[in-house]
Length: 77
Image (cartoon, rainbow, N blue to C red; front, side, top):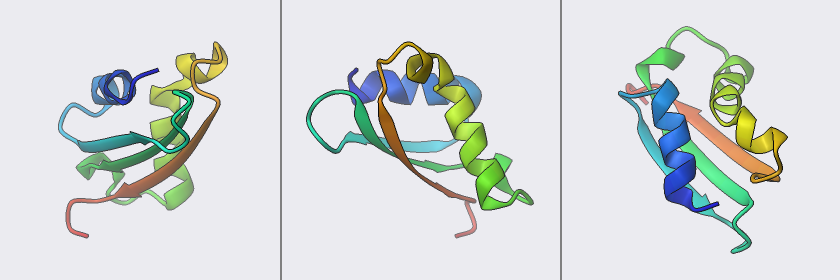
């Protein structure tokens, strides 16, 4: 997958978010994902990461994405 495709999947769930995606191995299936969104306000870190993972779950399930490293933040950080 291309990082732009991953970004597109995430933006469907978080249209107002700042999203950065990079392929950290060059193989198109390992991604570093950074998402900043007000949706995360009041949620603990694990719940924030679960929301991001849920947005890309189809690609994880079908093998297009093998591994991710997720960083989440609220806009005030």
